[in-house]
Image (cartoon, rainbow, N blue to C red; front, side):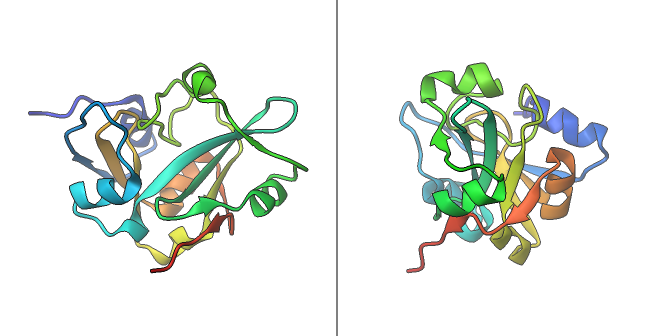
Length: 162
């Protein structure tokens, strides 16, 4: 079965960026990132999730962090020069990004929001981010992802070490 191109994939192609797609079957339930890593046969350190936060005025900020980590709120706020950030309410996710939970890609949101990729991504040759659809992951070079999303790299995640 050929994978239908998502908006995120089209954007990467238009920018001449190499990427690989890996897909997995989605059930009705939300799948945690570690499970996604297993399903696409990638190490969890390589798989990143996209989180959207807002400031007190409702301006969105995008954070791309390892699936095994959590956003360090203090570092995240400092990285985007805000005093305080709040998680974007789930019911606003599609309205703000154009994506649904579990299929939110940092590439191809409705607008190019300020984006921060956790600096741990630099330790990987490539990382996986959502391809813009549930069950679709795109493998891309960190520098290419940063270029296409206009992202900065900063230490914004708390990492869980086993």
